[in-house]
Amino acid sequence: MLMCRELARIASDYIDDELGTAQKLAVKMHLIMCEDCRSFIGNLRTSTDLIKAHSSGRADPELVRRIDEQVAQTLNAKRRTGDFT
Ligand SMILES: [Zn+2]
Image (cartoon, rainbow, N blue to C red; front, side, top):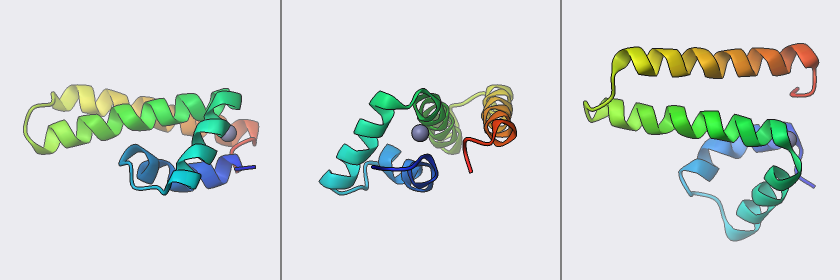
C-alpha cells in the first residue's frame, strides 16, 4: 500500500505520466481511498498546467501566483494536521 508521503514524492512524475504501469496503478488506488491526496494531486496538476502555460507565455501571472498560494496553503494545512509527513 502506497503511503501519502510516497505519493507526494512521485506525484509530479504521475502528472507527467512518467511512472511505470504498476506505480501508476498504486497511485490511482491510493487516490480512490485518500481524499487528501486527491486534492493534493488536483492542486499540483493545476499549478503544473499553469507553469507549463506560463513558460509558453499564455498564463496570467496573477493567476499563477494565486494558485501557488493555494497550493502552499494546502500543504501547510496538511503539515499542521500531521497526516502528511
Ligand atoms: Zn494519501
